[in-house]
Length: 349
Image (cartoon, rainbow, N blue to C red; front, top):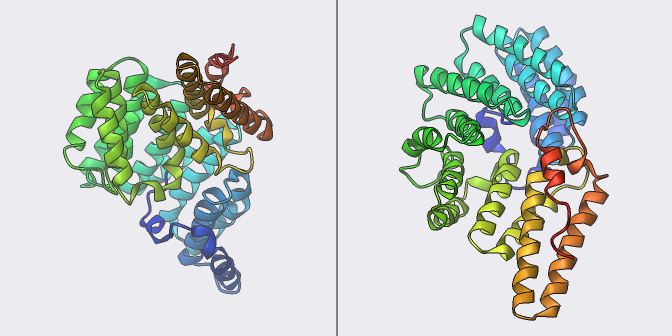
């Protein structure tokens, strides 16, 4: 899920520090007449604090409902499609797939009637992402590609959200084996080093490099991505990038880096709400543990073997701590059964 407003850049690297000020601002807004500023503050609170910091999507519902109410009362109709887009994503995470698409459809109708290109782009991001999670790859590619066309026609082709749509298009094409077509979408966007607006294209390009068999190019590109200061302040993309970085490290023969990436990312989850999206990362992490154990056995390093097994046990313990959610079937995440099956039998014992 992505929020396409520039407000995200007002959030520091430690957004939790701003929570008391945000809560105080919301209390003050409640004492004033309905306004677009109040609705915007509620959206910021729901997305940047409750969702990104606390990682509690269902806990955003009261704030989003209130934002929608305030926007309607204040006549801030331009904000309504964005609110609906976030509400749809929360519905998807909660397993309410039909409701999520109905909410997106409502937002799309409003944005289309208003000829609001930025809103249409944001809605296309969330719909294409939802289709990707459902393994509806053909439709995901169509939605993302169409949204990318809207962005370019509106003069927003250099906008970060346009790049996100290009990355979603590529992901859908890669999922059905159309690597050359995915590269045709992404390659023109990666002629410059990764930056705030285009680093997601570089993430996609690194995956394409792997599938082309150019592991060295993928590893080099990940070093460039890591060197970009803008990249990992985007907590909404942190998991997406982490799982791909971990896979790239495994393929590059650096299982220690892959395990470290996995452990770093999982440490950010203290509640199970969003861990339905962690299966791919866990699979990469456990593959890294298997490689570390195999390498240690080859050199007869028993302490290193025990360390690899302990690391795998640590990942399994994290899954249990998250109530087994990462590998429990979910209506929205079609890959969970395959990710769960890929872990058995364990390669470490």
